[in-house]
Length: 133
Image (cartoon, rainbow, N blue to C red; front, side, top):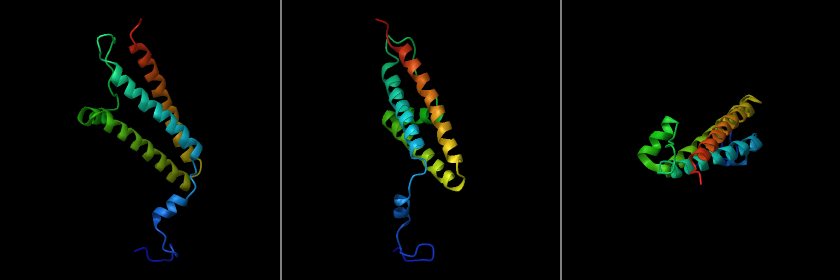
C-alpha cells in the first residue's frame, strides 16, 4: 500500500508523519482552545437560559453560518461546528507557521483575542439575562 519512494523511503504513511511532527504552536493552540471552550459553554448557557418569561431579552447566535446550523440541526451540531472550526484554525496556523515563522503565532494570538472578546461580551449578556432576585 505505502510503497517506499524518494520522499518517503521507509513507506510510512503521511498520517504517521503528521502524528510524529511536533506542534509548533502548542501554547497558542491551548490558549485558543481554552477561550473557544469558554465561547461554546457561554453560547450553550445563553441559548438555554434566555427567552423565558424572566429574561429581559432573547439571545441568538450572531454568526450567520452557526445560526443556520443551530436553526436546522440544533445545539449539538452547533457545538460540533464550533470545535471543527477551532481545529481548522489551529491546523491552518500550524501550516502557515511551518512555511512562514511567526505568522502562525500571530494568527492564533489574534484569534484568541477575538474569541476572548466574544467570551467577555457573552459573559455580559449572560449576566444581564439572569433574573434579578
